[in-house]
Length: 184
Image 1 (cartoon, rainbow, N blue to C red):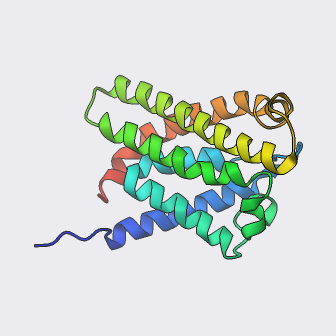
Image 2: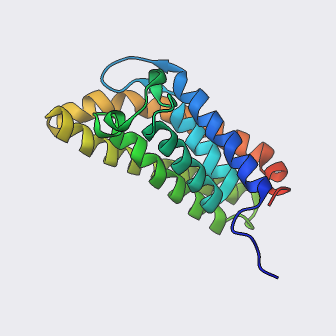
């Protein structure tokens, strides 16, 4: 018997997390060229709970929705201009963030609970770093700024908030992952 690529339950879960990413992106504080949002928190939780395949697909669907005009990005924005603009690299970086978190957490899912939590935190930090790198490179290109200025505007102010998001996402993933696994 052939196993389906995605079940109806998988698609329903992914839809819920796509909606979560959209809602978290709307929670936005414009503090410079890159607004503070809860998008990264939603990506961390999505990848941590859904794993590599479902988590990455959910992030890609979220980005595609924004690309075709659904106002799912920060400050209810959408369209190719957002992805080509100064913050677009961070949004594209979410795909790699989800892949990194999904792969690492999938590899260590049968480990002891504490090592799972430690690996989840490490995975989220690595995913966040990759997102920062991709986003900052695009920001530098689009905004015409140097590395030091771009880091000052787009990375340094977000390190502590992102660490808080990682801690909260890790706690939430640890608490509810068993219920999401029932659907797998």
